[in-house]
Image 1: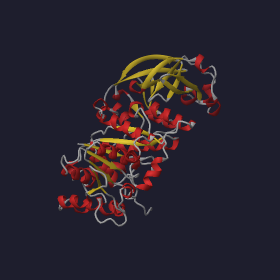
Image 2: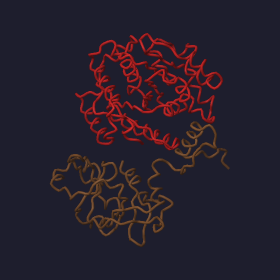
Image 3: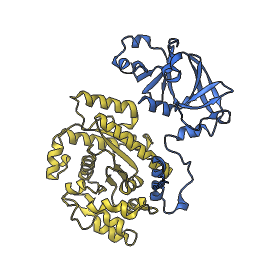
Image 4: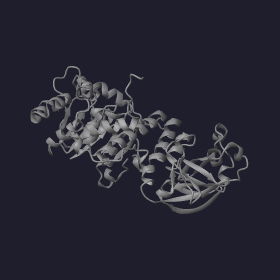
Length: 188
Length: 265
């Protein structure tokens, strides 16, 4: 048996320490969800209905929380004609889109979301979806719709597994829900 | 009364220089200004002629005695500098032991907030120089201040440190259930280097209105005057660094740039 006491996770440890420091007694500490700052957005999804953008990556229907979508632009073929060195460095990168106010690295969505054997059949992208703070964009073949998803209709994943970007699935809407924070962690 | 904390968990980004410059400019305008050195290393304290290893009363004294006798603790700690209207609460090396001594005793992150409240309206401007690590001293500074200034050296590693600082701020806000407005100040900017230009662009792209729209340039005179213990705006108000800090102060004090409108983590 281990002699060592298991220590708290990074953010839990900080949260407990800060609460001790900032409140005179434990009775003063307001009730807060025991989650990290990064997790707060995704946890909120689980609390109330949210609007999501449905898009298609070669037959796989994905959903993004609308709050995470910064812009949708037509595929910038002309701007990407002279693709830069970044493409050669990483096969997941299709190019850099630099048109004010954006400076965005375009990620090959099939590379991220599809198994290797299906990637080479992927259609040419028609759009880019700029996500999060605008640093990244996903290639996209078709924009399907904006829908409202109810948390109770989603089967939320409990473990990150091999696809940490996958928050859950909605059988009713036939889509997989993408967690942008986890996706970006894969890209950095 | 406005209380600014100047913080970044990366060292060497210009925290103390920012405190010294802004405070001297405020004092030279006839505004009573108090600076607090919350860093046990005591650079700010040394700048104004005290030795953090031998000083008798310091912010350590506040932590030791404030609960029992607040007036006496403050009276003993508050020191006038050589400059009109400018006062300091100095640091001492013993402050490095506070985390160990106080552990996680309830409410110890609020000592400085209570201390400054006790000072009432004596100082319209208070600036806190934070240590470069998370602990009881930084938490006290973040809990006490109204606005947070984050100097960031315009180089790539410093940008990573900024993410770290904003995460810490997010955690503190989560605990306080309040959010603290912040302003990122690009420092040591060298427009002649590609990396300086690129990292400044990245700062603006990523943090947008959270970044001050001007920069503090590289200015070797900062180093020269720190040896003399003289604030650059006092030594040479026309130095590029002094002019830049004067611009920053104008920005901070302009009603239209009320930091409460700026991004909150």
